[in-house]
Length: 159
Image (cartoon, rainbow, N blue to C red; front, side, top):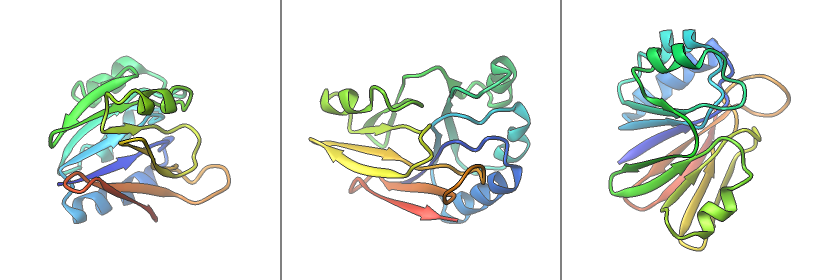
């Protein structure tokens, strides 16, 4: 099973449309967003995903009540735990607790965002993924991540 992982879309509707097209063409089963969607209107495009959406609030998310409503209840406060294809994951936005969560041994996967810097690494038996930033703000590349939950191999894609 392939899941798509994004973070820090920051209302960049052009990039969000590209993300939806990429994930739909790849046939991902789930999309996990590690925070900073920012505005509820992003779901005008995210609503076109052909997969289950799960997200968390980041530090820049505005109208949380309307974001929760537009996401059909699929945005949560952090940390949020979810099990996908038998793999237990925890999703956070800021990186402060990432290493401690990974080191705890309680999770197969730790997903985070905020830094706008892609990161894939192992901490003991836990895979850590930061997909980077999907928005075109600031310097740097726009990236997302794919995870194959069968073999727990992940890759960062620039788009």
